[in-house]
Image (tube, rainbow, N blue to C red; front, side, top):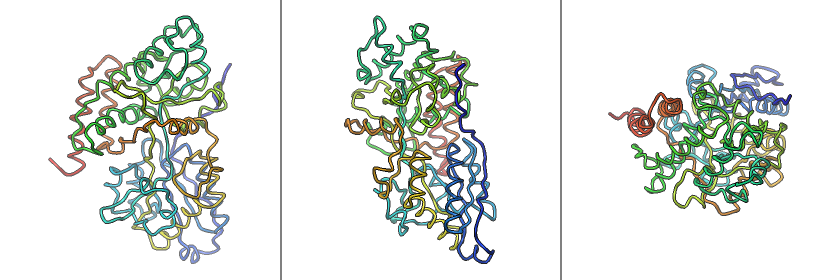
Length: 440
């Protein structure tokens, strides 16, 4: 029986890293670091890195990792404590708006000096640097090259090469035909399950929802809005319909399907397509799909000119240093971040253990992660395709995402209409934006 290797558990974990500081007095003088980590899949890696730093420098480092989907609530709780995080994260401009008063200005830091471009910084009106991205990630449609090529050999296949899939019409034709031939291909469905459990729904209420937002922003020449129009929601509907129709499971089962289910289905060769990003490689590898058979293509939704569309690339992971911390703790935190991004130990951990692509000048080619999904992202850029920006960082609130997610699920289950998705998307945006900005 085929077995999926154990996936990383998502839960709140705390590592009080051992310290070599000989006395409480020295600890106070040198300061200490408390990092509230956003990424559960890298919890153990951060704990090991913190331990290595303590061993090398004697500085106490604490790493706490919030459970998946709970970072904002955990941050609020931890910031209210006497021993608050000295290092935390925001997801972009909307996150920064909530925490700017707690963000130390990093413009004179070595970390900022080491940044490749201001495109990776969250800045203030007067040139303040409140947050710095530490990982650049890419997502799209991960696919199994071997299964797609096997499909191409079937009678009546609608394509003769994977490269022909460069628009929604072709993607749908291929997926529909694969679904019809799934028994012959020995698979469960064209697409891995679009689970709407909390461990998976972010892929659709956030990452997939990014596409219609991106195209509306592009058409209107804007970078954010207080009232989304929903110009491309028909396109959102047709890709969602494809996901839930040409699937490994009935759409009535999506409420209980998890992120681990979808990963397992793809990793075990039961599905051809799987929407996710470069970070998913660690959970896919060492199973049934060989590294050389892992590819990633853009998410096509039927917009004119999408043949030149690229993958979705950006960041929602910005380091912020707590300005309310003591001077000693702030300096200790800045020193830790500089070590993480310039030392052999730190850079190797970020690139090789965590699999991060980083925006710092210190990371030369030798620190490129061994990840076929990152290779696919680099090839997409080299092909001259236009990357899709991460506009979801402008979504007005988590409540807005939840409203869209609930409406998507009800539509998929047949207990709701698409009009409810449109209402959650458009009306919900205006309501949540007004609430978040003290309007109305």
